Length: 150
Image (cartoon, rainbow, N blue to C red; front, top):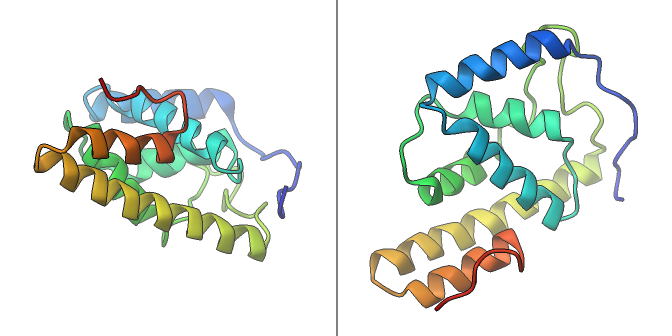
């Protein structure tokens, strides 16, 4: 994989578990389902980020999470482009993006922008009643396991 290092992140699993549980509660228990979606997206599109990194990014990105996960995905893809560097919430690991090479960062940001553009178009298609087009775009974003139209 392009620029991915297999070094372990120094973290505190117990502190992380407590922090993510509190963030999930603060976000009306909608954070963990969002993280699962984002991890799936990452796995479909080159696996640039480590799972823990995605969790912290998502937990940091949102101050609130309503019931519209589609709009939340669009916002995450936009926000994450300039907020790839997040700190370990327990204070042990520093910048969680430090394992990414320059070329991996550039490629990942390009993936985020493509996902953002498609999510924006999918949300617009849904708003105009074109559910078939919206689902087609979400399947590009989330892969073939995303439900088909009809």
